Each structure stands twice: as C-alpha cells, then as structure tokens.
Image (tube, rainbow, N blue to C red):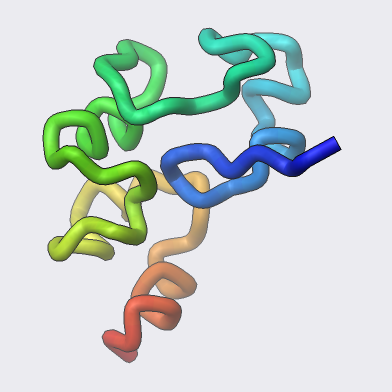
Length: 80
C-alpha cells in the first residue's frame, strides 16, 4: 500500500481527522480543492499547488494553525 501525503504534508494515515474516521475525502485523503474542513487544502487549490510546501509564500500565517509545527515549516523552508 502506497502512503498518501495530504496537502499540508502530513501522511494521511497519521492525520488525526482521518484516524478518527472523520476525513471528508475518505480514502482519497486531502486534495487541493475547496474544503470547508481544511483551510490549507482550500488555499493550495486557490494557489494552484499540490502541496503547501510548493507555495512561494510557505510558510505563511495559515501554516501556523498546523497540523505541522510552524518552527518545522520554517526549518524545511530554510528560513531559520
């Protein structure tokens, strides 16, 4: 089985919403599209990127809301 990565960068199989059985996309996991449950998926859709990390503005204010720590986002973006 191939691991799916959500728009935010977290493995879908470890996402708290998915583990609890509350993923709005079921087995598809998070996709960049309008999503009332995930601001990050909506933002990625509007900016036409597949992953939050691909955005030129990453990390941004929205990434401070999680699910990945903002400090880690800054680190992988090379901004600290």
